[in-house]
Length: 269
Image 1 (cartoon, one colour):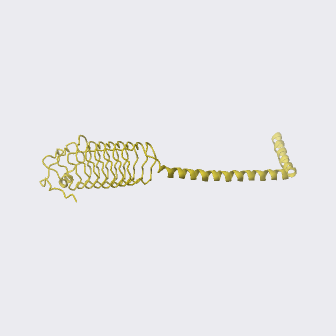
Image 2 (spheres, one colour; image 1 turned 90 degrees about the vertical axis):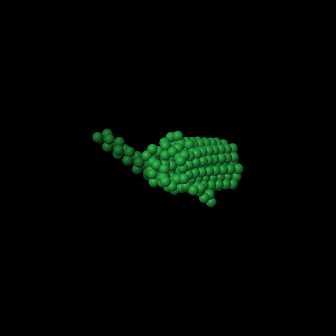
């Protein structure tokens, strides 16, 4: 204990002595250190500003990039232009604007188009397997003969969209707005239309070879003439009563054709 007290006493005396004899030197050193720290702080702030500016410039420049796999066009405006045959495989197109744009024959495999707008856009013959079209706005857009297996159209606005002949195996249309959409001869095996609005949509000739779900879908005047729904799941008699089939429609065993079938021709206005 005496040794410890001696060391503490010696340290204290040295500190006091240092303060008395070297105060001026210490003050100068402190001022230098403060100046250096201030300089470094200014440099750091300048670097951060320049880095942020260059990052913003880079992001803004992305919209001018030529179409290519994996690019980032998120939020960009690409309306009313010709992008047919473009390779946009794996691209980030979330929130982008493609209204009246021609994307026919484009490669959109695994691309992310969530919340994009594609009003009156052309995607005929496009390859879009595994793409994300959730929450898009695509009124009157043309997906005819597109390959879109395993895609998500959940919560999408697809009124009067054209899907004739499209490959839509395992596609997700949950809660999608599909009023007057045309699925003539489309492959819908394994698709999910739960809670979707299919009012006046056309499924004539659609291929359903597996458990396609129509749970709680709104099927007012949905055209199902010539459709084999024997493997469909979630269908209720009330939905069938609202829909339009004929003697070529095949229903699940627990449902029966309404007396009002066939329906009169639909008004195409």
